[in-house]
Length: 135
Image (cartoon, rainbow, N blue to C red; front, side, top):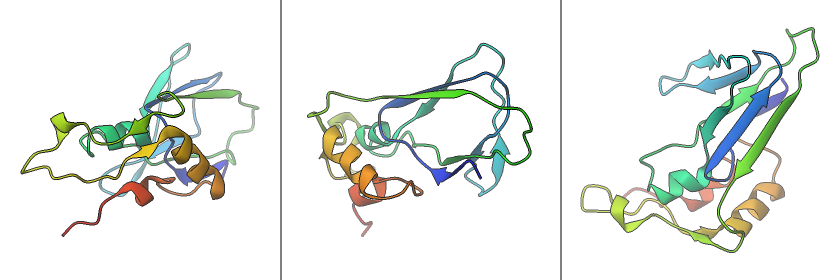
């Protein structure tokens, strides 16, 4: 296992690799699928703060990285793109109504990054701390 299953902080995450293979995303049915990244392409994934901002309409993808079966060295560059470090990220009013009640607490991006650094990378990063329990 190159990197255990997890989600990433930020709004979007961009990933560039020098070869295809290794990245897997968990489907809604609980199956791991391989992600094909064509040569010279940039993969864009959604991050935790985008999930919070959209009140869960857009989900931060659970993913992992496998390295065992790949014999060649691989170079991957991932970058997190988030708001200003002191910006409070909370569900936007456009995503909250009677059928879509408030589902997340707000948190500054700095606090979210700090919360992620308190733990080893785990599924859902700190996003579980932001979810409001369903009634």
